[in-house]
Length: 235
Ligand SMILES: [Zn+2]
Image (cartoon, rainbow, N blue to C red; front, side):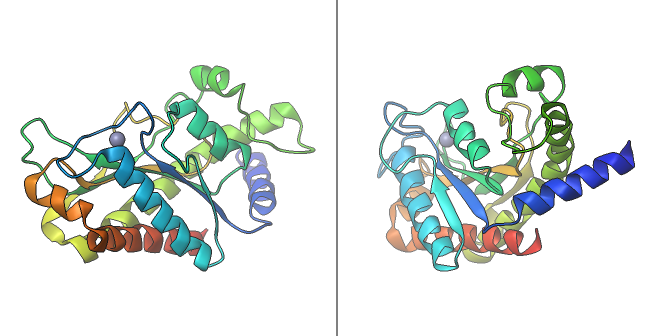
């Protein structure tokens, strides 16, 4: 079974990696969902600005990028994931800004999006968005989805660590809140490595002002693009 799975995964990887790499960037929130609110800007504005800049940097390196939204529109998580699954993308990166009740927190952190609902719930949930596998038996495709999800978790952890390193190099050690995994950060039914990066606290008096500054945004975009590019080079 292990051997079979390995062979199947090797075949799937060969198929998936035949073309150019595709990254899905997900600007968090949008439309009626503004997200966290800072004095200078709302989270939905920051995430779109950053995603657009990261996309430009990656495209300049020949990497294909798809944004889940390019305008100020409301989208569900399921819709965002469906975009990545349909391609299917090599990586999914959801970009967010943070806020804290006392407006006194600052720093950046990256979540590995878990695929806890893999077996029973996951199978039911993903039945409407299976990974497209032309010429693969549907039953085998389901097994492939499960096995890939396991590998994807490791790759996502890798990518998350890269994100933190790249942000640390530009934003300083003191803001490093680390790589985290929490059960409420679930990416329903995605088979590719998926992470969520909180680039900073937009409601912090100082950090909020920094994040509204184009120079800081460029710094953060540089960090995110570098981490993604490095990760793709190792896939
Ligand atoms: Zn958010």
